[in-house]
Length: 205
Length: 245
Image 1: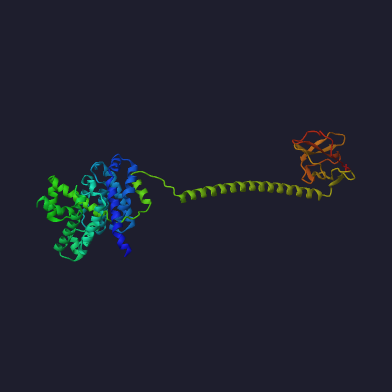
Image 2 (image 1 turned 120 degrees about the vertical axis):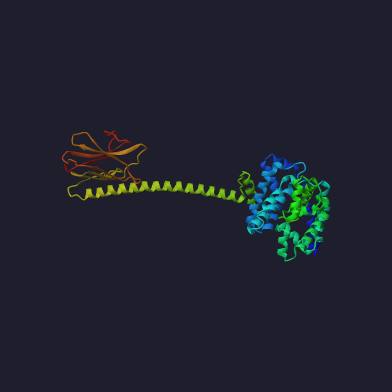
């Protein structure tokens, strides 16, 4: 019980750390664009643990996770030239690349959605990632993220899990959950709306 | 579908999960350069990143950083303390083995030298025994009755040569050696080889080759320079008159 009392604070603190890291990336982005190898080292120090954790959560295989983290950082390094160092959001970009590499790996071993690689690739373009304004980076936002998850029903959490961490389409979710497609779509839309409503100020750019 | 209706779609679209007509519609809006939809996509990607960032951090293996850096061509040799310690231990072991090897080599060379010396002594001893065993060998003693002179015997064999066995020889100064002489009756001394004594002052020396007993008068030993002398330069310390002549 004591643990449960402190869990929200720990969760919020963790999120805050991530947000604060997201905040101060412009100098790092400038060095990445200048092809400074030490910038790559700093980038890894800043986001390596998070990228590894995210990828491992998706692929559940330590060896594959290492390969995919390497691939993620190499992609970021090779595409950093297109990054907007003034407005760009480095952390969200790294996380998106990491998630997409992991989902792409899952799909390749499952043999599903062969055209999906191209789709994921398009979503990784650095110009699509912009910084939130600084007012969004507060402990309040971290609390909102936690509270947003708490507001989801079990089915909504399930579909969010399947979408974010398994890369299933709504049709695939319906098959997996043995539920009508329409029901799954409703869960997905409502879940995303809840998250968006809770976090919209934080992510609006 | 207008841009506002598409806002919901872009969250799935950003995850790469939009399907069918909705996806086609989103593609069409973005393809037209619709700024509203582009902003919706950016917002959706930011929202997704924030959700993804809620994952609990985990520590990747340390080698992963090296792999990442190596993938951009930066190889950094990382020396852990264990590796440094291991390298230092290997260096110490290598030095110790080197010293052992050098010591063993020296000992081996010394043993080889000793073996050669023992082998030479054995050959000389066998030659001396063979010398003594011959019936026509003539024996001449020397030094008996003197206060502290070298003592010993000279054995002369007409076919085999001269064998000198001596003890109580004086200790030589550095650069000096004993030299034996065969002195014919009424003739000049002929060099008969040089030799050293052992630590107790004993020595034996053989002059191989036929000796004309009828002409030999004296077998003598003098102390000479290390290279030997063509004629005696000091007073003999041994002078054995050969009586068989």
